[in-house]
Length: 141
Picture 1 (spheres, helix red, strand yellow):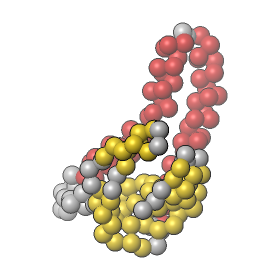
Picture 2 (picture 1 turned 135 degrees about the vertical axis):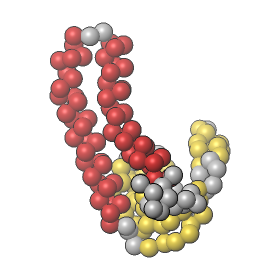
Picture 3 (picture 1 turned 180 degrees about the vertical axis):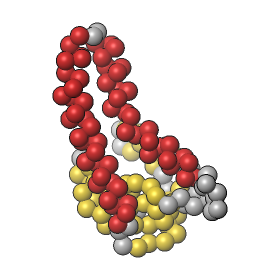
Picture 4 (picture 1 turned 45 degrees about the vertical axis):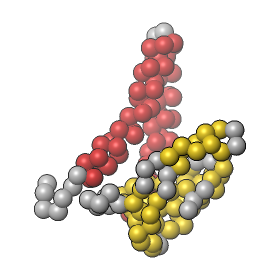
């Protein structure tokens, strides 16, 4: 199982190819500062319920997985993770440039609220597609 300490180590990143039993394909990555750098392997996992555990001073969430299948890194998923990371970095850079003048004209509270909403937009589409894929059945559109 992957493990990381303060953003360094290994982690499961991405979810793809959901099956009706709740399992999906994910890839184990070497991560640095929570950024996925090198894919190690892809596995089909089924997640068990999340539990909270105390680790030293801070509480953290931990999820146990049942690994159903293991293979080389799934190239389509690796490309999607890299693509999302590049898109998100470009999105943040573009926002910083375009919202600089906007933030100077509005109050701090409104500016921060708008900024948080716009920064979070790239997370909404993958979430929606993931939820839609969980209910997918062969033969249905």
